[in-house]
Image (cartoon, rainbow, N blue to C red; front, side, top):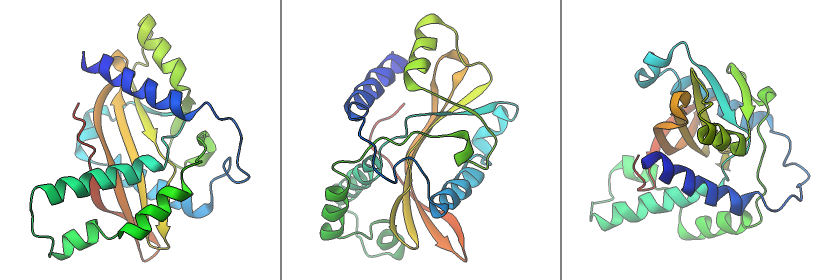
Length: 209
């Protein structure tokens, strides 16, 4: 049931995002900064203990990237949840997590209102990505039972760069042995320190697997 719900939600998400095929001038090419952010994130994330039992699995990336607006929406959901819980937002950790003001947020959302869907290529990654896979093809494997055995399936957004030292990435990963069994999903704040991007904070959207 959870798996079915996941595919319904994702199907609706992609049906709303892939209909416009007009390509922006720079939409088909990652910048070097974006590549650095992605590489540093994946190197750190995929080395975590929760993936140890999948050490012999290959990585597959869903070709249609999650939209960058998902990152700012998750940030806002997390901020609203924090405020609702009446926590005292005075610690440095909180200031570091929720550092955008309303003007910045509105500007970001306005800039992303006509955002195009980016399509990942294996060449975008230095991490050993076996191949990219269209979302529709993944759904077909689930319907036919021809699952992606011994694969970890990654959904990833293009980095939403806030400034020279801060960027958001939305990420979901699942085990492909039985279609898609989600392992984790979140939006992460990456912060640059000495030319390396580190995970600074995680934000969640209230959807639990």
